[in-house]
Amino acid sequence: MNTGTTQQPTGLGGPAAVATAIGAGLLAGGLTAFGQAWLPDALRSLANSSGSWSLLAFALALVARHRGGAALSGFAALACMLLGYVLVNEARGYPSSTGLVLFWTAAAVVAGPLLGAGAHLLRWSRGRAAIWGIGAISGVLVGEGAYGLLHIADTTYPPYWWGEIVVGVLLLLAAHAWRFRRWSTTATAALLTAAVAAAFVLAYSNGGTLMQLL
Image 1: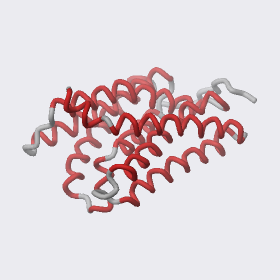
Image 2 (image 1 turned 180 degrees about the vertical axis):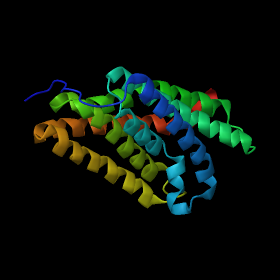
Image 3 (image 1 turned 90 degrees about the vertical axis):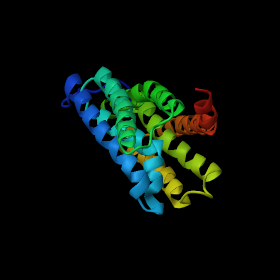
Image 4 (image 1 turned 45 degrees about the vertical axis):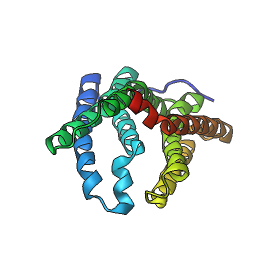
């Protein structure tokens, strides 16, 4: 089984990939600020979900030709989503707290490059090297879905969180068909997904406390 990196036929160079991530990130962040007020109850969690931002950052990094550009694209996307969100809310008269800005900046610094590099591995690698890519994004989606059902189901729309879990599982199955082919590799990716999901629930459960301390 080939576990190395395959030949990279197409994709954006580093500057173009990062520029795309910056533009899309700013737009998505600004739309998030409006979405929190305008979306119906069944969809409002979409504008309060780190899973949706993470999935967009992951998708934007997929177009990068090189792993470094993909990692930087992941960071740029998340950082600019935060910037767009803060700027639009500021213009609307809803300033963001210092704790919120610092917490999500730290998340962009840590999670952004991991999601970006993971997207590159998933697209260009086969076998076990690619499990890190799908494990990262599926873990975030499953983890946030689990957190939503465990902690905020009474104040939000529970089917949204179930949907996020389903999307995470479907992405894992898609990676099996596209990259892994062997169920033993997919099982390893599922274990990594579970580990990331558990870490996400733990971090998110203490996120409010951390933001108050910052």
